[in-house]
Image (cartoon, rainbow, N blue to C red; front, side, top):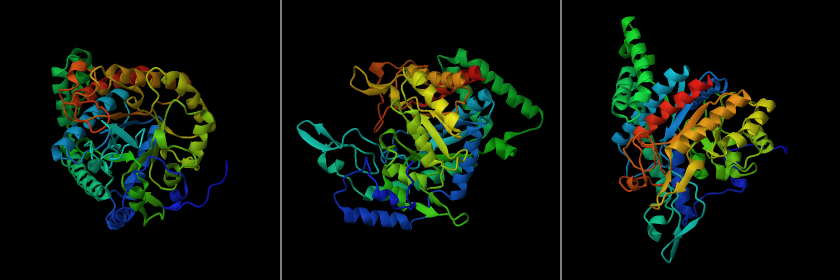
Length: 451
């Protein structure tokens, strides 16, 4: 492999970059980025190192990664209620998975920074008018007018402040009693009682209930034990708008290393993972745990080279490979990659994104995903790992805590006619709260079969 030059927080600017907005006023962009660079970090280097240590346990097969949240966060629907309900679903899923899989669940939200979205084209046609594509609220507005779609760098600053508020609420909820194990389990019992799949899930729910009753009989009260009443939920997003990421990159006063303090974990998308591209260049130099999406065109040689660039020291927990291949392709395409990485000795976390490879347009014209396809892709992911003797380390899903109707199927059997009821996403279709908990029970079954 050709040796790479010295990394700096600006060295990405010397590389070819994709998926960036065409900012009309570079002076205004520079002003916004300078303002962000003077603001406090959103997360701290020590927190990122704690996440990396937990992900090292996932890489070793001793923990499971649950990465979940919005496809793209919204400026318009930002509220304490939305954050609380999204967190509630993640906590419910984590309890089901922890009990079923028998290992700790590392909880990472797609939140407090997941604003930007890659697009297949820079522009789109609305009638006879060609306008810029919507790239997420950090860049422009979804309203289909020229003015709304013009990239506005003031939105970068707004994204920073919304991320700060989201993090503040997350820390308050996760440390202030909201995450108490008994409380979370009572929500799950309510879900099982009202779910059409309740009979299927009842046995597991009753087992968790008996475990909690046993702990109480032994004098262990969850309210008095921080391990049972408080949790860590880390944040993550796709590091897409590199000017924003650079502005929040700071040198750690303890280690002297550079960290992107916009989130605990950053990932590179399927559209921006070129080995010699700007996104790989930027993320190779920050100390955060990082992820990379792995689609169906990835080869074993390319993936090994990517691992060598992003994690040359082979630090466990540093690199998560997030597969997104589609339910019909996952087993056949993944197994050679698992063998290649295993043979090369890279200590990666393997996670499954079962959403992006299973998106299609329903007869109603809405972009959607079917719950059954999502489960099928995770099933293929687990079977591939079983065949290769590797650990299916986690799942990476798009969901909301709201009762939206964006993905078909699930226990409530949403159909195409339901999509228009509450189709609220600003970009890709998300699982709703009930489908998210449904999925946790299904994944629990798959992993129990694996172990």
